[in-house]
Image 1 (cartoon, rainbow, N blue to C red):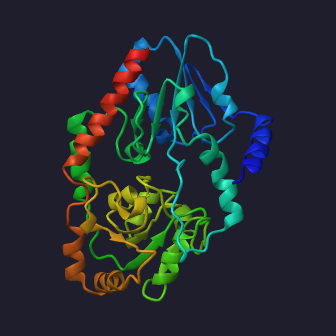
Image 2 (cartoon, rainbow, N blue to C red; image 1 turned 90 degrees about the vertical axis):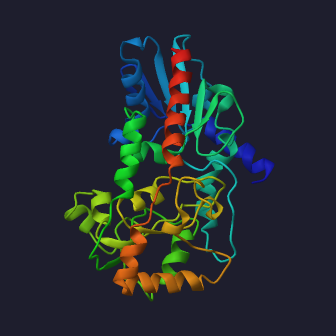
Length: 335
């Protein structure tokens, strides 16, 4: 965006109202909808670990609203915590992708202009998916909140990883599933169009929807629904360094084989077993990927051997536990 466009955007942003939800000792500002326990993960983490020690009001902030809300002066007795599970950094574009440029600009401009430094100057603690060198910042990717409960200790983290690693779906005859609400940046379109002649794809989300089974038969239980498929086409909405959300982890949790692109095709090294996923290349011909998919589709013995590979590597437990301990320590100091 040009300097003039940025200036005009900031003027418009100034007049927008903040989105705020109050819940007792906690407030959610510029947050997403509070639909289930994952949306309340940080609140539940604090309640569990600090119980009767919460004597300050805690504000949670995210990227879904005007940045001016984050700069508002709060009382001395308030702790400000920022979290983004969305990409706020520059992303990689590919010539092979058909990006909706108009919608892409709407999608990213607030996040890239205002939130690229994780609101670090206006927060007590900031959390995000990438590495960022600041004493108030902790790398805390969204997938942790999807895969691990806020009350987990180290033993329970290990047990959860073992559980995920031992989910196998045999005798699966359905080919592939996609559960997405949009494809503004073109990643999903490219992969789906590349494999549509070899896989029968069910589109269970808003994007390209061709089935209502997720809602009507599975009551919107995404993980249970995905267990009936061999493959889950689950790229990120855009490709940025270290940007890994819950998508690939949910695919592994459901026992499917992820067909994935994200994090410059190096998703969570040391955590995700690359031999258990299919990484789509937007700059190559994917000939070997096509051969692999065909074999996995038609050769049950090979498929069963492939899916029994370890999904999450041993370092996963150490990483998750360490990040939760870092967060606990910072909150303890502030309280």
